[in-house]
Length: 163
Image (cartoon, rainbow, N blue to C red; front, side):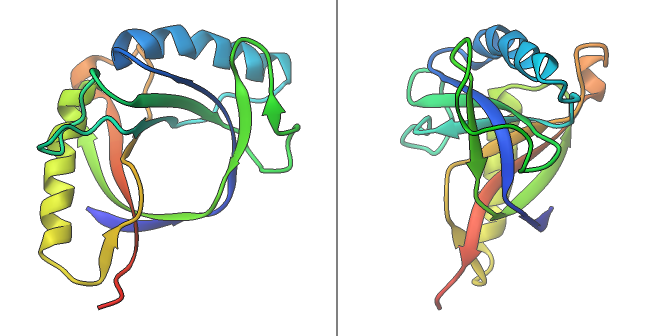
Protein backbone atom coordinates (compact mmCIF):
# COMPACT_ATOMS: atom_id res chain seq x y z
CA UNK A 1 0.00 0.00 0.00
CA UNK A 2 1.38 3.40 -0.92
CA UNK A 3 0.59 7.02 -1.79
CA UNK A 4 1.22 7.83 -5.46
CA UNK A 5 1.01 11.05 -7.47
CA UNK A 6 0.16 11.14 -11.17
CA UNK A 7 0.57 13.98 -13.70
CA UNK A 8 -2.10 15.14 -16.13
CA UNK A 9 -2.92 12.34 -18.59
CA UNK A 10 -4.85 12.18 -21.85
CA UNK A 11 -7.06 9.17 -22.27
CA UNK A 12 -9.69 7.64 -24.52
CA UNK A 13 -12.69 6.51 -22.50
CA UNK A 14 -16.13 4.95 -22.65
CA UNK A 15 -18.63 5.43 -19.82
CA UNK A 16 -21.55 3.10 -19.25
CA UNK A 17 -23.80 1.51 -16.62
CA UNK A 18 -24.67 -2.04 -15.68
CA UNK A 19 -22.47 -5.09 -15.24
CA UNK A 20 -18.83 -4.04 -15.24
CA UNK A 21 -17.47 -7.38 -16.47
CA UNK A 22 -19.70 -7.70 -19.56
CA UNK A 23 -19.63 -3.96 -20.21
CA UNK A 24 -15.87 -3.78 -20.10
CA UNK A 25 -15.67 -6.50 -22.74
CA UNK A 26 -17.95 -4.43 -24.99
CA UNK A 27 -15.89 -1.27 -24.32
CA UNK A 28 -12.46 -2.77 -24.87
CA UNK A 29 -12.77 -3.23 -28.64
CA UNK A 30 -14.02 0.28 -29.54
CA UNK A 31 -11.21 1.72 -27.41
CA UNK A 32 -8.66 -0.57 -29.02
CA UNK A 33 -9.88 0.36 -32.52
CA UNK A 34 -9.72 4.05 -31.55
CA UNK A 35 -6.03 3.94 -30.61
CA UNK A 36 -5.15 1.58 -33.46
CA UNK A 37 -6.75 3.91 -36.03
CA UNK A 38 -4.64 6.79 -34.66
CA UNK A 39 -1.38 4.87 -34.51
CA UNK A 40 -1.31 5.03 -30.71
CA UNK A 41 0.41 2.08 -29.05
CA UNK A 42 -1.52 0.06 -26.49
CA UNK A 43 -0.30 0.96 -23.02
CA UNK A 44 -0.81 -0.63 -19.67
CA UNK A 45 -2.77 -0.30 -17.47
CA UNK A 46 -6.39 -0.17 -18.57
CA UNK A 47 -8.24 2.09 -16.14
CA UNK A 48 -11.66 1.38 -14.65
CA UNK A 49 -13.26 4.28 -12.76
CA UNK A 50 -16.33 3.71 -10.58
CA UNK A 51 -18.68 6.68 -10.13
CA UNK A 52 -21.61 6.57 -7.74
CA UNK A 53 -21.47 2.78 -7.50
CA UNK A 54 -21.08 2.57 -3.70
CA UNK A 55 -23.91 1.08 -1.66
CA UNK A 56 -24.73 2.03 1.95
CA UNK A 57 -21.79 -0.05 3.22
CA UNK A 58 -19.30 1.45 0.76
CA UNK A 59 -19.16 -1.62 -1.49
CA UNK A 60 -19.29 -1.09 -5.24
CA UNK A 61 -22.33 -2.56 -6.93
CA UNK A 62 -23.24 -3.01 -10.60
CA UNK A 63 -26.78 -2.00 -9.62
CA UNK A 64 -25.95 1.70 -9.28
CA UNK A 65 -23.83 4.47 -10.73
CA UNK A 66 -21.60 4.24 -13.77
CA UNK A 67 -18.16 3.01 -14.72
CA UNK A 68 -15.60 4.26 -17.21
CA UNK A 69 -13.02 2.18 -19.04
CA UNK A 70 -10.09 4.13 -20.44
CA UNK A 71 -6.87 3.64 -22.38
CA UNK A 72 -4.06 6.08 -21.69
CA UNK A 73 -2.29 8.01 -24.41
CA UNK A 74 1.47 7.91 -24.08
CA UNK A 75 1.69 11.73 -23.73
CA UNK A 76 -0.96 14.42 -23.14
CA UNK A 77 -0.13 16.21 -26.41
CA UNK A 78 -1.15 13.26 -28.60
CA UNK A 79 -4.32 13.80 -30.61
CA UNK A 80 -7.25 16.04 -29.84
CA UNK A 81 -9.68 15.97 -26.92
CA UNK A 82 -13.41 15.64 -27.55
CA UNK A 83 -15.86 13.08 -28.91
CA UNK A 84 -14.65 10.34 -31.24
CA UNK A 85 -16.29 7.31 -32.83
CA UNK A 86 -18.27 4.52 -31.08
CA UNK A 87 -19.02 6.49 -27.87
CA UNK A 88 -15.30 7.10 -27.28
CA UNK A 89 -14.43 10.41 -25.64
CA UNK A 90 -10.88 11.76 -25.42
CA UNK A 91 -10.32 13.70 -22.21
CA UNK A 92 -7.52 15.04 -20.08
CA UNK A 93 -7.52 13.81 -16.49
CA UNK A 94 -5.99 16.34 -14.09
CA UNK A 95 -3.08 15.44 -11.81
CA UNK A 96 -4.08 13.35 -8.83
CA UNK A 97 -2.75 11.73 -5.71
CA UNK A 98 -4.07 8.33 -4.63
CA UNK A 99 -3.70 5.70 -1.96
CA UNK A 100 -3.03 2.49 -3.86
CA UNK A 101 -3.04 -1.21 -3.07
CA UNK A 102 -1.59 -3.80 -5.46
CA UNK A 103 -3.57 -7.02 -5.85
CA UNK A 104 -2.98 -10.31 -7.62
CA UNK A 105 -5.97 -12.26 -8.91
CA UNK A 106 -8.95 -11.98 -11.20
CA UNK A 107 -10.30 -8.54 -12.03
CA UNK A 108 -13.79 -7.56 -10.91
CA UNK A 109 -15.81 -5.86 -8.23
CA UNK A 110 -15.19 -8.59 -5.65
CA UNK A 111 -11.45 -7.92 -5.74
CA UNK A 112 -12.00 -4.14 -5.90
CA UNK A 113 -14.27 -4.22 -2.83
CA UNK A 114 -11.76 -6.32 -0.86
CA UNK A 115 -9.03 -3.78 -1.61
CA UNK A 116 -11.29 -0.79 -0.89
CA UNK A 117 -11.97 -2.16 2.61
CA UNK A 118 -8.21 -2.31 3.26
CA UNK A 119 -7.61 1.17 1.82
CA UNK A 120 -10.43 2.71 3.89
CA UNK A 121 -9.09 1.01 7.02
CA UNK A 122 -5.64 2.45 6.35
CA UNK A 123 -7.09 5.94 5.80
CA UNK A 124 -9.07 5.68 9.05
CA UNK A 125 -5.86 4.94 10.99
CA UNK A 126 -4.01 8.10 9.93
CA UNK A 127 -4.67 11.83 9.77
CA UNK A 128 -2.55 13.07 6.82
CA UNK A 129 -4.90 12.16 3.94
CA UNK A 130 -8.64 12.29 3.24
CA UNK A 131 -10.70 10.85 0.38
CA UNK A 132 -10.87 13.19 -2.63
CA UNK A 133 -12.76 11.19 -5.24
CA UNK A 134 -14.25 7.94 -6.47
CA UNK A 135 -12.28 4.66 -6.57
CA UNK A 136 -10.61 3.22 -9.63
CA UNK A 137 -8.75 0.09 -10.69
CA UNK A 138 -5.67 -0.11 -12.89
CA UNK A 139 -5.59 -3.49 -14.64
CA UNK A 140 -2.20 -4.47 -16.03
CA UNK A 141 -2.67 -7.86 -17.70
CA UNK A 142 -4.73 -9.06 -20.63
CA UNK A 143 -6.79 -12.22 -21.01
CA UNK A 144 -3.72 -14.25 -22.02
CA UNK A 145 -2.62 -14.16 -18.36
CA UNK A 146 -4.34 -16.73 -16.15
CA UNK A 147 -6.88 -14.99 -13.88
CA UNK A 148 -5.10 -15.91 -10.64
CA UNK A 149 -1.87 -14.26 -11.84
CA UNK A 150 -3.25 -10.95 -13.10
CA UNK A 151 -1.98 -7.77 -11.45
CA UNK A 152 -4.03 -4.71 -10.60
CA UNK A 153 -3.95 -1.69 -8.36
CA UNK A 154 -7.05 -0.45 -6.59
CA UNK A 155 -6.89 3.26 -5.79
CA UNK A 156 -8.79 5.98 -3.98
CA UNK A 157 -7.95 9.63 -4.82
CA UNK A 158 -6.80 11.53 -1.72
CA UNK A 159 -5.81 15.04 -0.72
CA UNK A 160 -3.93 16.36 2.30
CA UNK A 161 -6.01 16.60 5.45
CA UNK A 162 -6.59 20.05 6.89
CA UNK A 163 -6.36 18.77 10.50
